Length: 247
Length: 95
Image (cartoon, rainbow over all chains, first blue to last red; front, side, top):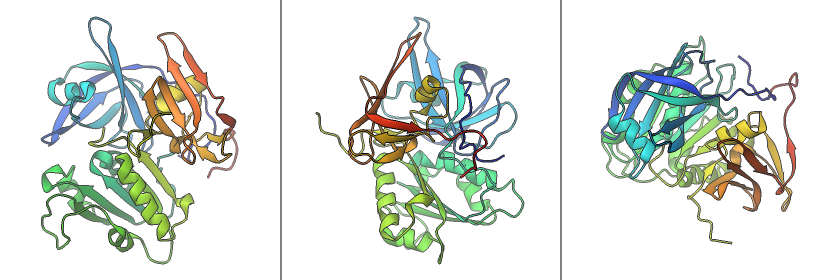
C-alpha cells in the first residue's frame, strides 16, 4: 500500500460496530475489539469517530485511535477513561461484549506509517498517545526486513504502562520508558521528558521519521526539543489530543 | 479575543472526521495558507478548538483558518481565513 497523500473521494458513512472482545489494559483503560462488517481496512496511525446515541436521541461523538493493524472486519481501540468523559466512561466502564455502537473511518492520512517507508523511525508517546504508535509497532512486526524502530514512552507510573509485556517482547524494538511521577527499574529519576532523553534515542548521523503523539503540551515540548537538536522539521509528524489524559 | 492557552486545543488529526466529511477528501493532508500570516500548513497541524462549532486556527499566528458547524442534515464550512487550500491530485508522486 502506498502512502495515500493524494486526493481520494472519501466515503465516511457510519457503520454498525459490535463489541466482540474486551481486554483490561490498565485500571483506567481497556482495549475493545469491534466487528465492523465491510470495514475497508486502515493504515497504522489512523483513527475512527465513534458515535453513541441514547434512547432519547441525544448523541455524542468522539475520535479514537485504532490500536492494531488492519485485520479483516476487526477494529481494535484502546480507550482511556477521562474524568467526566461521557463517551470514554461508557466505553471503559459499561460496554459489554455484544453491545453495538456507530463508528466511521478510517480517518486521517498524515499521522500514518505504512510499512513501505525505509527511514529509521523514532516514536515518542505520552500517556495514551501510545495507542496509534502501538499500531505502527505491530505493523512493523508484520514486515520482512523492517527499518529500525526506537520508542520513547512517557507515563506517570509503572501502573500506567499500556501493552507492557508486549512492548518488552517485541524483537528489534528499542524501548525506553520514561516515568514522570514514580520511577521503577531505571536509573533515570522520575521527571518529564527532556533533551537528554531525546538525544539518547535519536539515531546518530541521520534524521529518523518521527511520530509524536500525546497531550498537546507534551507534543509541543518534544517538537521544540527535537528542532533545537537540529532535526529537520519535515521528518516530524505530530498528533495532539488535548489538555491531558488522552483519548 | 479570548486568551488561547497552549493546551486547550487538539490538532487537525482528531478533528479530521467532520472536516473530511464536509470536504469529501482526507482533510489532514490538505495544505491551508493562512490569509493573515501567509504561512502554509497541513490541516493536521492546525490548532482545533471545540467552541461555536469546530474552529481551526493557524499553528503560526493562531488566526482562524476555518470553522465547521454541523447540523443533523448539513455541514457549514467557513474557510474565509484560508487564502488557499492545496490538495494533492491522484497520480501525483507520493511523498
